[in-house]
Length: 375
Figure 1: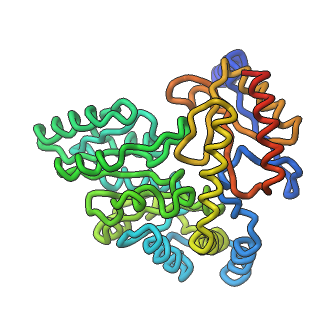
Figure 2: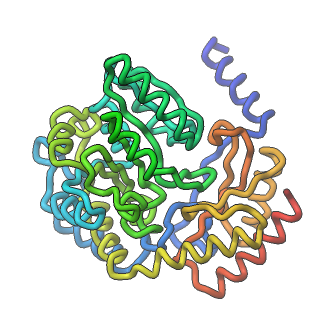
């Protein structure tokens, strides 16, 4: 056995012993299991209008964009989606990329370098963490939602003559809590810093997102990133903010410049989903109502978004509860180290507006029973 084979075998054995092995599971096109593990918060991924728009776009434009956005890969569909996203999120401009992961990589690497101090909340998504690593900026990881720690970092940046970038999520995916955006935006304005807010879990569930809901949209020192793969049920990502930022990204963001443009089908699907969200604001309200009721039934704190986390005693207990849910016809996820910032394994339950009311009531009863048994 070679050195690399030995290393891979040892890594696999260590993961298995710790209960942290992850495996791919195929999902059929027609699945009778109720999906409470994915990110289709508003149930739009299989909405007839969204699917038709995606299919029509593929037939008209082809299977792919065929090139990077700066060559021949910018389609009229991209321009339409960017205009409507910017309008809905109350932003001057938007730039669409192939994934939400690329959007976060792009905004951080295009704005930060060795002369920039990045203040990153301890709970931000891996894509923001990776963006900072690639940027080689000076990094300070601040305690979760600690406004005082952010201010101390900004004071230090000003004293050192550094530009500063603050990275947060509007709604955090693991604990489900909302960032103190109003306080952070005020600090960034005071200390001439940029605030980057990832709206992956806020968009759709809270209409145009928490940045817009709190009256912070359009501010020159607040930048928003978003994914099109959660509430909009499609694929892709976007960066929204001042027009000068968009121009800078087009010219400097490597994840945008050197990547093939978002394919026609998901572009059109996201656009159709966005129009559904605007026409049916009750979808987000349904998610918020359901998540509050489920949290109360399970005895946990209600999240600000659609993802409910239920603490479990160990990774093994979380996996066992997940298996029991699947046997009962419910697909739920679980957070295990290293995906959880505090090391506590949890069941990950996605509350969605896409499940009919009667099925949802049955799902809640099942979840309450199995959590009680396995927790």
